[in-house]
Amino acid sequence: MKKVALAMLALFALSSCNTMIGMGRDFRQLGEGMENKAHGRPFNSSDPSHEDNLPTY
Image 1: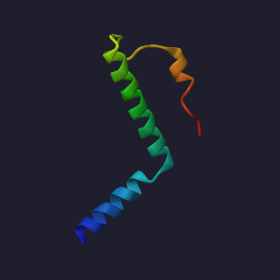
Image 2: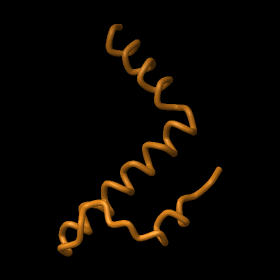
Image 3: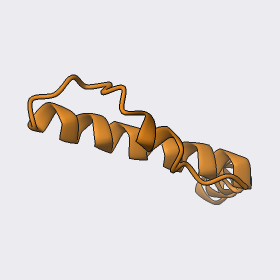
């Protein structure tokens, strides 16, 4: 019973669209940073073209 309640609480907490969109953006930026490091660029490359491609909802 506790597992079901915990699962429902987690589902409720993560079901917000804004939360999921924000988490997706964070993972995307993390992936871009890792890719930059793999190519020898700074982790937080300041390429302005990436900032304009974020979806707006």
